[in-house]
Length: 393
Ligand code: PLP
Image (cartoon, rainbow, N blue to C red; front, side, top):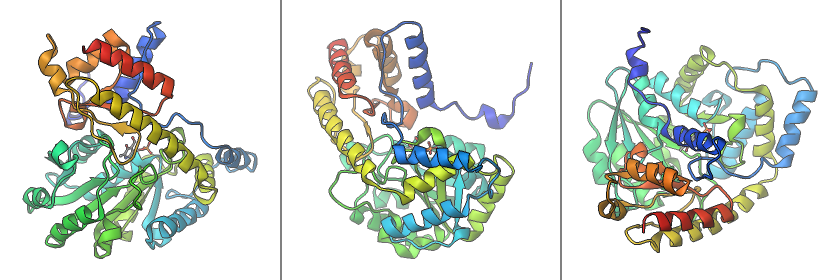
């Protein structure tokens, strides 16, 4: 009997990847499954980005790079922050990693001691709590509901902060809810954070560009620049440029902490893939029209999906601000169906009976909901909505 570490026994595999795998297995077994679980755009990576990668291979850029990223990519990231976010960083404040996931992992390992509390608003991206646990920290979850469009209030944040709070995680637009914080909402959260100078902030801006509120994207630093010295900005090319497989994410923040994160990375993966870094330079420095085209398509699908859910008795679905997710509530359906007691049962039922794969809300700390990813064709969505409506009638 192999004796596994307490650390690994305390966490679970990513539930979103599990749903995607399960759907793939059923498909391979010949079942007709529409996968609405995956958190990745269904578009191809734009051609000019692929060309840059091919050119990098041919130019021999196939060796180790600096652990924290090539100078070219760091410069592209620094320019991106100036251009899009009006934020100024030096090269020693930037760390490039193998995906946004590794950025947060590095951050947790670099900051947390045993028992340090990390405030995570729910519904949350599935990986935050588990990565905090791996780093011996303690996730402190703030629950939200449709009433605040799944966003935490200043009062809730104030009540959650203790002497052990080390970090607050903000993710806007949010996976899984699609909601984005407004300027005023961020200003109110910033007011609370000012009262607690030792608390640090991580703003995960992965879905920055996938936004259709009509307002410019804002994060906590756009509104409270005085928090610069204790804020980490996490972002990446995965979602904006349909580059999930290339594995490039990045973090910006106080130099001392970024150096510590780099040290962690130097003892785990070293540099992110050299070829992917060249592709990311092309993504950040190249034409940005590809983003708008994808967002337009996501918005169209969003409008269709939200209406279709709201037409189903017992389902409530708020229109969202961005991303390619919606987070409908199914409690009314769960309450009226026999042998279905929660969102996990319902997701399993929809997968096996209707051939539609959705991720149960429990995975994101919000039971009674399901997350739909509409990063798939309109045809698939039309068929999926028909199947769901029929299955829960
Ligand atoms: N942050 C959020 C909110 C996400 O949804 C994801 C991916 O699902 C990531 C970070 C990590 O992205 P990646 O590691 O693919 O770059």
